[in-house]
Image 1: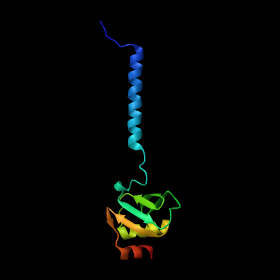
Image 2 (image 1 turned 180 degrees about the vertical axis):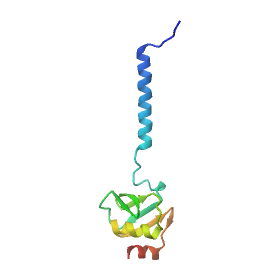
Image 3 (image 1 turned 60 degrees about the vertical axis):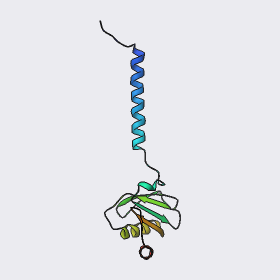
Amino acid sequence: MTLSLPRLTNLSAIALGLGYTALTFGAALAPAPATAAAGAYYVAELAAPASESRTVAGGVAWSCQGTTCVANKGTSRPMRMCRELQREMGEVTAFTTDGEALEADKLARCNG
C-alpha cells in the first residue's frame, strides 16, 4: 500500500517553498541604503548635497545621499581617499575612516 498526499497539498508545499526562497534571497541581495553608515569603512560629509548618488573615487564605489557619502574599504591611505572624493564631489567637511575622524589639518589639506 502506498501513501500519498492529495495533489493540491503537494502544489501548496512547492509554492510555499519557492515563495520562502524568493523572500530569503531578496532580503539577502537587497542593497543597503547610503544612510546605513554603521557598516561602511569610509564616511564623508560634504559641504553641499552630492550631485550624483553613486560615483567611483579612489578606486572604490561611493554611495551618496544628501551630504553623506559612504564606501567600503579601499587600498589607498585615508588622505588619498579623501582627496579623490573631494575632486569628484566637492568640499569635504568631515571624513571618517573605520570610525576614526581625519584630523582638522589633514582635512584642510584634503580640500586644498
